[in-house]
Length: 102
Image 1 (spheres, one colour):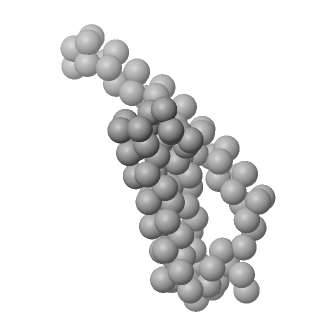
Image 2 (image 1 turned 60 degrees about the vertical axis):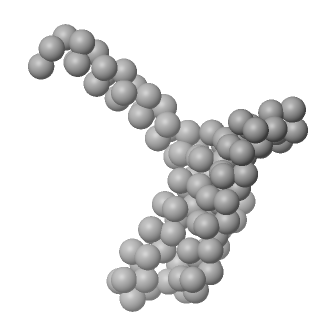
C-alpha cells in the first residue's frame, strides 16, 4: 500500500472516530431525554423516518435558503444515526422475544 493511501486511511479513521464519538454522545443524551422507545415497530420506524425528514429539510434549508437555515445538517445527520441505532437495538430485542419497555 502506498504512503499516500496509508495517510488517507488514517485520516478517514480519525474522521470516523470523531463522527462515532459525536453519535455516541448524542445517543447517551437521547436515551436520557427519551428513555422509552415505542413497542410498535412501525411507530419506531416512523421515528427514524421523521429524523431523516428533518435531515433533508436541514440540508434543503442550508443549501437553498442559507439565510433562513435554523437547523444544522450535521446535527440532524447525527440525530438520524442515533434514532436508527435505537431502532436497530429495539429490533434486536424484538427478535429475542423482548421489548425495550417491558
